[in-house]
Structures are given as C-alpha cells and as structure tokens.
Length: 357
Image (cartoon, rainbow, N blue to C red; front, top):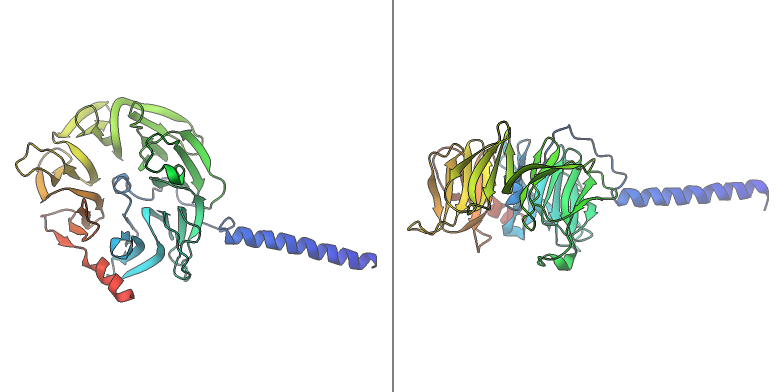
C-alpha cells in the first residue's frame, strides 16, 4: 500500500470518527443552536411553578399539563381557540421562552412519534415550531421544582428513589438551555420559582427558612431578610410570602423600606398572585364552612370565597384561574382572573383528547 492510499484512508477514518461524534452530539441535543433569550427572561410565574407548573402562558399560547391525557403537554392557541397535543410524555414545571417550551417529565415512553420522551426522568426542551416536535433532554434528573432564568434552567435534583425521603440529599443545580454539564449551586432543598433580577429568591424550610438569593451564573448568594418566608413571589419592590412563624398568613415585604404588612389573617396552604389579586387555599377551620379557595386584593380588601372545599394547583393566566379539587385530577375548574367569580370547567382540555383519539 503506497503512501498516498494510506493518507487517504487515514483522512477517511478521521472524518468518519469526527462525523460520528458530531452526529451523536446533535442527536443528544448538545449541538442544537438555541437562540439566546433576552436578559430578564423568566419562563413562568413563581405562583404557577409553586403550584406544580401545570399552566404557562407565553405569546398568546397557554401550555398546560392535560390530566385528561395522563398529564401530557398540550397547547391552547388563544387567537384560534385550537387545542393540540405537543408531547407524549407527561409535563410539570412548564416554562416557555421564544419558540421553546421547557418542562420536567418523570415518565418515559417507548412510543415513537409526537414529541415522545426518550430517556425517562429529566428536563426537556421542545421547539414548538418544529414539525417533529421531538423532546431533547437537557438534564437527566429527578426534580420537584425548576425555573427558566435568562438562559439557564435552575432546578432541584435528587435520586429517583429519594423523592419521598425527607432526609435525602438534594442539590440545587443549573444547566444551560442548550444542554451541557449541569453545575451544582449548593446542597439543600429550596422552593424553586421566584426569579428577581436574574437571581433565584428562596427559603429552605428544612433549615432556618429565611429569605435568601443566589446568582445561578456566579453561584454567589446573599441573605435578603431574616424573616421566615415560605414560597416567596416577587412583584416589583414587593415580595409576597407565607409567614411560617405566624400560622402561614399571607404577608408582603416591601424591599424599599423593609416594611412588612399582613394581607390575610387566614392560614394558607398554597397561593398565587396575579396583578392586584391573590388566590389562595385557606385551612381556617374557624369558618363555619371550613376549607375554601379564596381570593383577596393585594391591599387586603375584597376578600371572598371562590369555591368551598380543599383545592390545589392554583394556576393563573391572563384570562383564567385554573384549579382542581385536592383528591381529583379532573375536572379542571376555572374562573375569570378578574371581574366576577364564574366557575366553569376547562372542557377544551377534555374535548381535545377525545378529538385526537
């Protein structure tokens, strides 16, 4: 074999290896060209994410986890009213920015086709404008909270068998929206959802529970308040929270003057904030009716019952507040976000499933 032939073969082998590695990286989602988001981008509201991240509204579309179809990812186009399925894997902690939806799925699927989840538990990215709508895993993990901040996903991570173990090792991680190796910010179990100035604001109830913040890029953190603030929601210079030292009453902390004001004297299990309304589930048994989903204005006025009973997953979009009964995934109830209370069911979600079958 002459020198020229050997050179050609050598070059061919190198090209084959490089090409193969490149293909593997592309299939793994590592080489995907994902446009950068603008500074200040947040994938969903803190209140929605604290309630499971089952609804997310962006750019005229409402992305939601459809309990009529095992929690699979669906999309409602507000302009046309059309509801379509985007993925065969179940979805939680839904975030969206640009043409992409990011979500957590804990159920693998062997079914090929529409946006199927290929590798099991983890965080996925989906291009909603792609015809194939394949999900790309960007982090393999078991998680109970995640949020998109600028161009990073911040999420909790722990072993798959440790989900219900209160003593399990939990870390707060961050990973680029393009994928790559995750970075560990710290060991601990914060509530994940509140982003202010590109930083995560959180408390750790297993520890002192005071309000802290951390920069997901540098990893630098700081104490924000010595008050015990559960489930913080930042709106401008105000941070709403549940006071774990005061029977989980809803309060607001004004960062401009360090003042604190109580909004409701009722014990609260979960809540969500939109504009000047707060929707919350009370466990105030002193009321004759017992438990109820309530709403109150952020100034503490106009407190009223939305629906009696125990509810969960309070999710808010521009048009509706969605919620469900504590022990039932369906039906999904909803009422207009503003204006008079008028409870109906989210029939479009059920009808979309019947149409696709």
